[in-house]
Length: 120
Image (cartoon, rainbow, N blue to C red; front, top):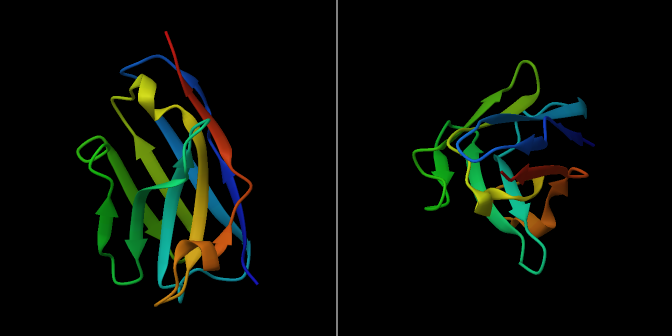
């Protein structure tokens, strides 16, 4: 079974950039239908940030379109979320997710999460 490990979180000022990485420490992500990043801010539900499917199709939350870019490297078993022009409201714990075709994210695999804090 794939084990997902996130890294790259931290604190940044508004307008700054961060790159989050999700590494599958065991197994391969090549056959996984969709790899995604979700986030959860205090008091809020976990929400989709971005997702990349096995065929390369991507899906972004409206709030991050044009600022965030998701990519997956099936050889390195790595999923990267490049976050630019960060805003205060991007502050959250960010989670990596792997799900199969026809399954919701809750039925998939999750990493432990990494904190992103945007503050001045």
